Length: 212
Image (cartoon, rainbow, N blue to C red):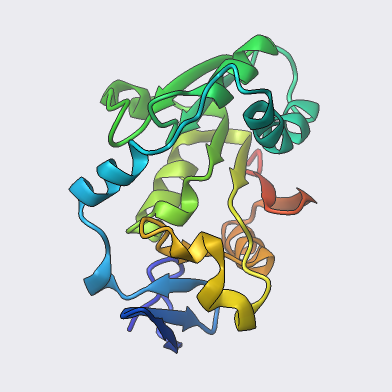
């Protein structure tokens, strides 16, 4: 078994829950669903259509603010950004635009304009996206290519902190969540690429690409 995130081969079976087989990488500490059990595109779409992410929901805006606020603190005005995996209702992009930034949208199911992937950006925001990556090594390679030197990659995903509670963890029970990160996992990825990594709050990582 090869780790889909760091591509290391030091992987072992971690746990089987309700027939779903999870593996753990000893190098980056990612926990991932066996590749043969990844959900289909149709199953993912059906699940996503159950989400209710209303731009008028103050609670949802507060939730996204956990990512948006520390990112905005690090950005000069009028930067060009990308909401990667924005979903059908890009509330995060709207919040970043309200702060004065130009934000493009991409989502493999809902916003599929490939032209946005031919540019580079001063920042990329990925809120509740990275846990869905079926081919995360390729995804992070793409994000690196999309990010301008000195730019910020902002990720929000629930960090795995308690192996003993993994089987009953609500985040695991979502069938479209196939990859789980520890804080150490994201720091590992940043070190490998020479990125600076900050953890401003639980479940949020800000990674800055070097300028040269």
